[in-house]
Length: 344
Image (cartoon, rainbow, N blue to C red; front, side, top):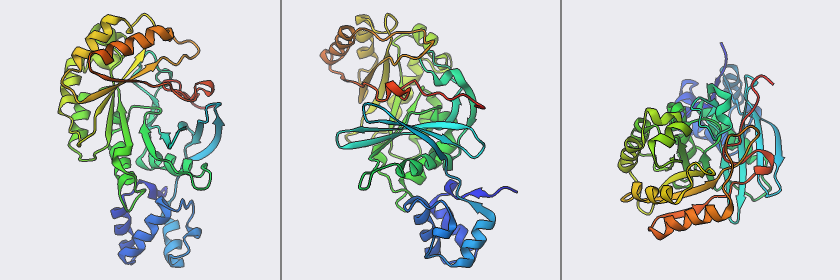
């Protein structure tokens, strides 16, 4: 029987686990601290835990954190981190510095089964879901790459995979990351991105996680979105926006709509005007993402004047619209560029 991964457990479950070994609750809290705060990768390092407790833990449990295979630096300061999982498969995480923040982009699946036409990850297909511990483990592993005194300030679920298609592991990982006895991350500094699974968005809204939500919209008509994002055939724009309207937002928090700009496809003045009408009444902002090209991609990035004109129209109509120039484009780490050969 394979050992269970302690990183899959919530802090309260770790306390309960300690009790099954005859240990008081505070031993469970100490164990959680070693796992989530002190980056322990083995039981020998847990010097304040009784030796026999550590030995018995090691017999039945593991600390299965993804292994950093390599970290590739970009000229803009970001780093693409290739992580090898216990079964040999790989996922990507990306560290992205920006002034006073350091954002980590994490993956939730190996590959992705949604086939968005502008995304390289979709060409991999769906290989498998990650466990909660494998998602949390990306954060723990990435922390070991930081300079002394540096810290990850924001986490975005925008790497490989669709977080809400791996719903249970995504939610469990969010609870571990935000638990004060776990990693202790502030929920408002975590963003979950989705291709637009309307039912899962509504379900997530009932979880009381208070994290940010980013929705990949990328088109203003069902005809274009059907072509770009096959998921639209199951959850067309009107249904998606209905779910977004019902998503609970804490005070001063807005829902983000992601919109990748594709030359001659979804970047016309008419698209900009339709977008303002679609989002009227939503407490939302728009992230405009100029397309990040990859070998074999069927699209191109619009010229800069066209990009700026699209943004200007949104601003004129009262929408908050920012340009998100993705980091790590020179190392294949930008939005929509993450992919890994399976079995290599």
